[in-house]
Image 1: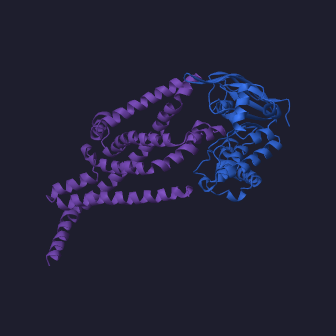
Image 2: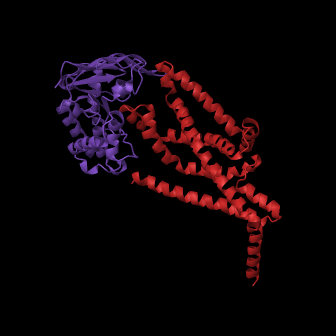
Image 3: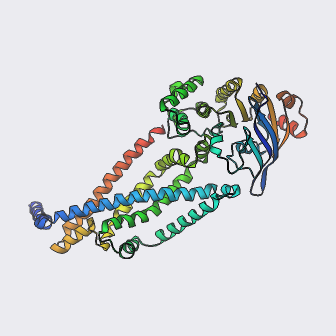
Length: 246
Length: 246
């Protein structure tokens, strides 16, 4: 599905929290339709990297280009760009005081000025696709972890984003619920969505990724097709990492 | 026999104290003024509280990021934060009676009607306490909620209004109710600036009739009844808001 159009590009991206450097210069390009999976040990900076892509973390150096615009420029209205970058969090972060339907329609209604009717129709269609249409009027506290994360995914999709960012979407789930979330993500990848996924699910990376980035100590140590990364790792650090997780 | 006798004398006393010379009208005026001052002040307090709490918690939570980001945002925020801090220190550091008298005898020297001045003074006073209650409430809400709102493209104010503040209200409701009760009782010093509130009315009748027992007990009973009704309403509201966490 990968095309030649670059959708996200980072140049020498750096992020420091006080004296601790988490990202030490990351260059990469993500193309439209590409599924990029980021793996690496905990504390390696992979989540931070993902969060700098929509500026939830402000980079302390370097640039992020989204659809050709330098979004690290302070003059840019980041809210407009974020509308086109969906994000899914490890802890779901559904809004607990709203029903599932309201969770999904609030952003489109406030930002795209579409009618409640239209927003709800679209939301229900999406819920149908992830098998949760009957839960539209439930509150998040009434859902299981897997259901919450599926709602979080379709909530992001309601804004019709050009790219989806996943920050360890299955790490907070009970093992038996991981599958249902990964299935939704696979479907999304098959439909051609551009995805950047931080995960510990090596099976998913192998099966779905077009490209795998191995990040350690704030830099991309190795990248390549799943086959190259998992079958023929080059660097000692990747070999060491894989020996521990597989 | 004794009880009947006592009861009869109480009714005579009641007639003498409240009915003769239509003195009950004074009580009604006092009651209405107490309610006016309390509700007016609470409204002002909540408005001030929301603004001050938003400024203070924004500064605490994302001031650093804003500083790194550069631009004019940080100095403005720091300036308003400093103003809020001075406001909190001064208001919480001085007695409300003194503030009330300063408002009446110094600031609004040309206004003769004490009720609006009392509303103003108690509102400013209450705002400081409500602000800290709200700030605690905002800080207690998971950062992920804010990030989820922003990642959908909602701007800072939209995220606050639709995501954070509704959740905050639910958290702070019991404490806010406490503040409301305290405020109601604090307004009993409004007599210092010539306002006929409930306490002042009771006291005036007592002074006129040289009978202290009934007027003061009636005043106490009315405060108690208002508080009981209020507590009951808040408990109901809490139950309704709890709808979303089954």
